[in-house]
Image (cartoon, rainbow, N blue to C red):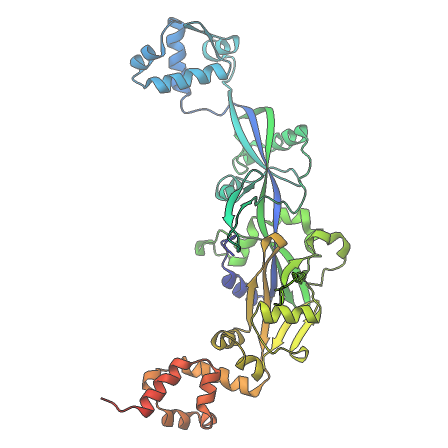
Length: 452
């Protein structure tokens, strides 16, 4: 879950106001290119004025040393050396033994002033790995630390204590092969008034050379249900949200990913959750834990799955509920399992056999729970929805709410049962069923021990 910085509960609440219910979230690595280039740029450099003074001195006396120029200009030798090298790199200055001369271009720029000075510099552009369109400025700043580079790797210790090498780069969509001419055309076609928004130098004149690195950016594919209609859409896993924007959290999670969604809409609309039961190893008597996965790797075989989200057999879903959601004693009559809904009706046996009754009751009140999947399997989280038609469970839930709204230290069994007569018989059993053992202990102390 640490892969993203998204508030799942806030997102859930926002969508609930639109009567949309989250069924689950997938995760994909979207392809991005970082284009490394050498460009000619006429944008004025803050140190251009210093360069002009350096040139004036060298025109007057070509054999001035860098140390002498630094002393004359009151600057450091390192700065003078850097600017002279920049003038040479840009093709304005020529070094000949211990002397410096202006090139023909340098003469036209600094002496004749018939040319605008052009800076030659390295520059990185970020482009969409599918459409090859340049990305906006925010993908150079805020998202720059979120990219996964094709050369990234790290070591980790697995569950068996063995150190392994992990390479997180794994695009779920193949990068479109690069055509240098197309990339240059796409970048240069951005008109000057929109260049700042796209983080393209205002004075860009020419792109002379290109190389690239392959990157990916993790996106969420969120699945919601409203009026029995499913919606699958891309969400930003790192939404930039501010109350000052007067936008919802959901709007923030959609703002920067809509353009990417248009490229993969035909694929994400067919995404479904699947369950894989690993083969049991020889000699292992325990049951294998089910793995949540998706149909992404075979998405082309599931065309027409717009209104489908789950592809679970009843047997596999039982294993997921028991081993992942930790709910025991389930039976098919209490589980709804279809292509657009997974829910469970909690009965007395399930509650009493739950390892954590308080958590289960809390989930019944919230009417939902979710568990993380493995992003390597394209699964982020899976939701399961709760309800109860069991009268015993309903009474336990109601009691749990009451106990969490009063001061237990001031609670007296006689007065409590007079206010809530439905618990007069077997109050103790209901408290145990609610998992409130501390409450029971306090009541027993108060009832059976002498006050000092």
